[in-house]
Image 1 (tube, rainbow, N blue to C red):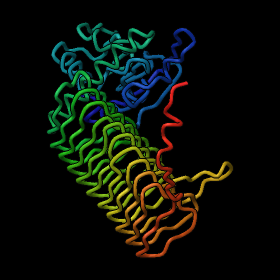
Image 2: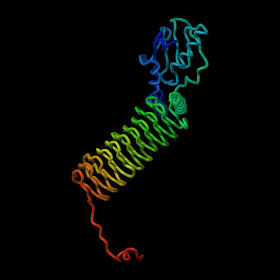
Image 3: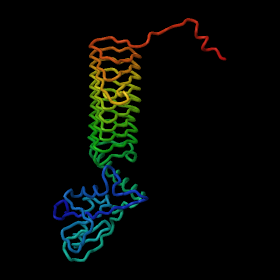
Length: 347
């Protein structure tokens, strides 16, 4: 009707509102600022500070601080105008101008969507309405949500069909969720890519990538640059930063993997630490395929561990290790028979 047929151009009158020292025009509303939501109606629009509507024709003028107005609503208004024989209309959110110089008729009935973001309450209201719109769209596209009222998905996020999103999920930025993914409770993903058939529970991820058929969580933290391959397991209380964990590798629990390249089918035991920082600089560690890192192993970077290596629990590794080696790098156990009583005795 109006903008969809390109018969009208769009002008946006920019308004900046402050509330208790906060510039509301810069506040994020489900992945976009208020003016960015209005610009979605027509990316070729023009933003102006002031406008004389009496000098315009074939133009829609909207305010920048009313992000609930969209193309669908404008089309509904245009239908009403046609039925009433109106060329020019004054709206709570702006004007629709068909002919220059004609009088304006007021159009009522759209006040709920012409909400101006002017304080914390209207900001919350607009967020809720846009969140509901996004979730409704995703569910119509084949995404399942057990409790959509607790799910927050930015408009910039892509979620593919067949994915299940459970309670208390927040998906932000340029996040991409594959098909048939299961997002358990309490995930927060920012600018993160998740492969098909992967399951996450209680994960915080920022600028990370997770492959297909992988499980992550609960309580895992994927920091920027974390890349986890296909068919991997990243368990509870694991932190991965700026590292590549290749397909089939397992980091089941209580480990830190920083600035590392971890090979295929590597087992990272409980309590393993990739010691990447010497107090001044970060250094990388490389671990080859099919290697076993026993519990409480510490790898002091820079260091390389070859393929098919077995490192015994409690070892501290400061030098590179060749393929196929068995490594035991810990203090020899000392036993003093009958001496425990000395230390157990109460004073």
